[in-house]
Length: 160
Image (cartoon, rainbow, N blue to C red; front, side):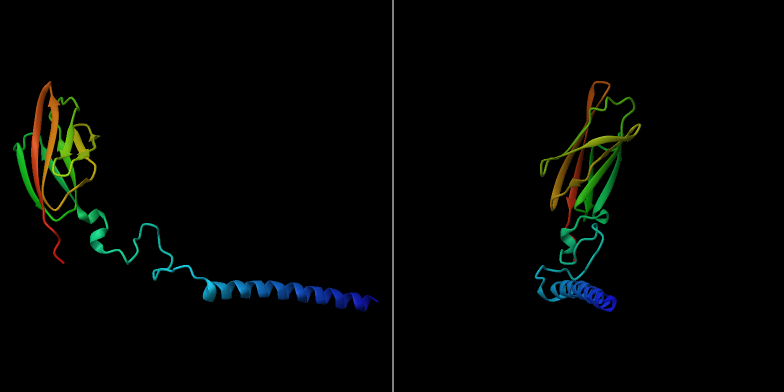
């Protein structure tokens, strides 16, 4: 009688192991054959890596912006030519400035955010540049006197 129970336990163990193997095999077959979800050719990548299908010109990266540093004693109109799609302006503020500063790209209407990176130094967020001429107006007040700098940025297209 003991021998009969051992066979029954062995069959149950064999059945249990068979079910587990069938589940694993079934999942594997489903993933490789029946799964119709689109897959990328890149497989798993960090979230910051853009898919290869996006063209280089559609991607925004740190290499596609330019930093324009100006001083209060700079000429009232500055000109620059760039291939960058984005511009960051850094301005040494006039002594004892009231911090009422503004920066706008008049060509596309973008109102930049200015903040004090460190005492006496204002910097902007990334300002989108349209192809062709971009006219930017930086303004601030010093001891109640309004001051301004005009920036003329000519963005030329990247050559392929």
